[in-house]
Length: 86
Image (cartoon, rainbow, N blue to C red; front, side):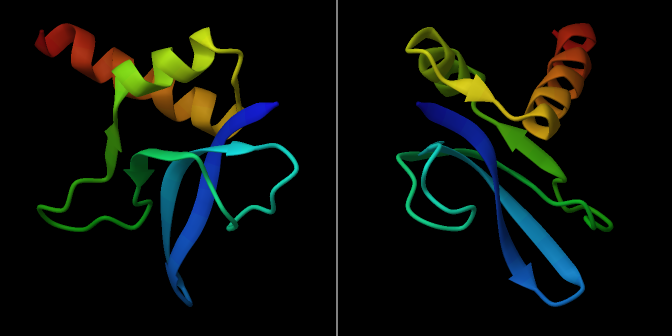
């Protein structure tokens, strides 16, 4: 089964997460099939805190992938921000 989840990067006290599609059996920061976005919880100034490729998320979900609870929340929030702007 494929799961779309967060893979942690960054340094100590400065987390950065890649949103990845990965097999459920692979460890959190291990191999992944595709990077579909990123999340920067400590974005400051003009930095972009979240980027999601909605078309790729939809592709993986249509092929049976599950979203982790955190990624589901982030995608929902990102879609809500995009909808009023469009």
